[in-house]
Length: 410
Image (cartoon, rainbow, N blue to C red; front, side, top):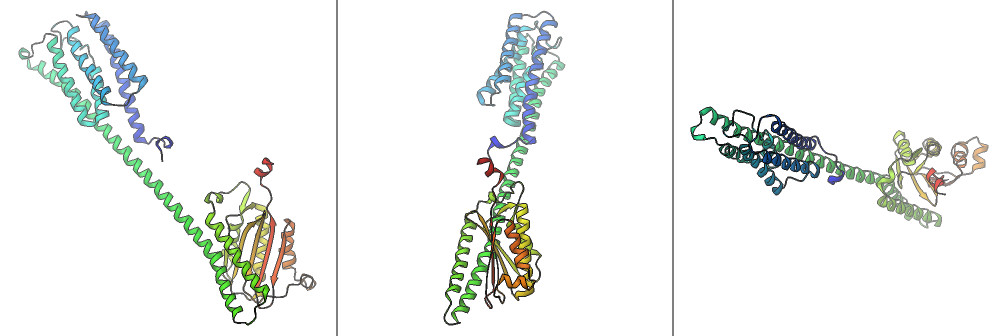
């Protein structure tokens, strides 16, 4: 997954908030410097003080607008400017007034320490804090303070200022590294989850394909093998039976080719449609009297009403097989052929001589009314191929109605 298409994690949002917080601190510190320049008393070099404030405002404005990456040149320039501010503070404040009035540099140099911590971790923050501590000493020397002659309290205050820089840089560095590590771990976990889902989807598709090949192609090939051996041992073989076996094998070839080339996205449910394959699988799963296998070249989406009628027709055909055929198995197979859905019900039962008029006269209306009637209502046809001792094959052909998208394109 590319970074452009990935939403930021909580850790990454935390890093962004930290960066914005440092920028806000810079502006607040700069505003406080302006207040001190206006209210804290006379300055020794007011021109230098205001020039420094203007330079800091320009630098902070550029950082806010450009938001440059934390590259070494940017970090080095920021640290140098912050150290210079500490030195300038000693030059612009009245001589020997350090500790008697607010420090002109205020808290702005701290921003450089925390920026280094955010960009370079604990070590970078501590190193920047030490550099700023050294510039603080230089600023006090520039103010005319004799550190060697000062009271211990003054030296402790100077050490405390240096420690503040070091602690600020180190603490922010620690937080930044924790956020970075959390972001990395979360990103890795997300990528592993995505890979696991992709593997699961591939395995599920493979298992689905294996089931469909087993339920349709392999079962039909087993039937072809069995019937072929029977015909081979029965002497002269009628041409129509050989043709039937050839047609069965050709149908399974088409089914296998379609299964192999099938686009998984084709199984996504269109609006208002139902899967004929799913309906046939439900019928097969509900049949307890004999094994029923299902094969289909894809999901075969049809209007829900068509699927209901075809499922009812197949249900009636299965009932007939259970009651009259004495079969040991039934195979259901569906495919699309020339704008029609072809649905076949095959059994290996005793077979019979199909005579529609005789069946109607005898009141046996299952095939003629419940099966053929439903199919003809959908604009389709029914064909029955059967003879005593050879099993039965019922073929239903139903035109596929145009979808709403097809009608709109027309």
